[in-house]
Image (cartoon, rainbow, N blue to C red):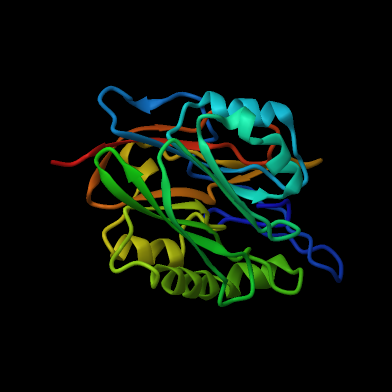
Length: 269
């Protein structure tokens, strides 16, 4: 999410002049505390989703990302500069895949487990692509939808985007899910909405927002302005019925306007 993007809940919009200048104050979810909720004891899998910001390639962000020790890392807004920072030697022994989509639609995955499938899905709304992924883990295959959904912007106007783009993200989710026979085990990434039609659709399929397992739900995006700091919760890890959520962590690290979202999972019997 860039400075012009917004989340769905608790939003106050002020329009100044002919152009659209959005000023938001968010209420409800607290900012990231940096504290881990739940426990990593006995987890079978840890995943991390992180919009690294295409404008801010930074070695310290790479170091902070890898320091979280996740088994699988899903990145948004990557580009050639980020791929060079997350080079094969730096991320070893993790396998890495990058797909560039200039300027800000790139995706990447770093995995401790073999990547058996990486099917790229173009957006039906002519926005950012998604990845349908399958990993081979010691406990069996793992299907994951990795996304960066349509931003809440129409013709560079946030007010219109706030009201008019929810259906676009919902259409993207429905189209991307067609690459799986049923709901995936995980759906992760920058959804560009805290709540909305895309989020509701995944919930209707039986997938749980990981942060809901350990409230309070924390914000994962912030942008300082001269008046105040804008913030929201566009980043999600959705978990299917094969797993339970053991831990959630929003560490306050990195140079991006987002924080990473790390989730520990246990396989259900």
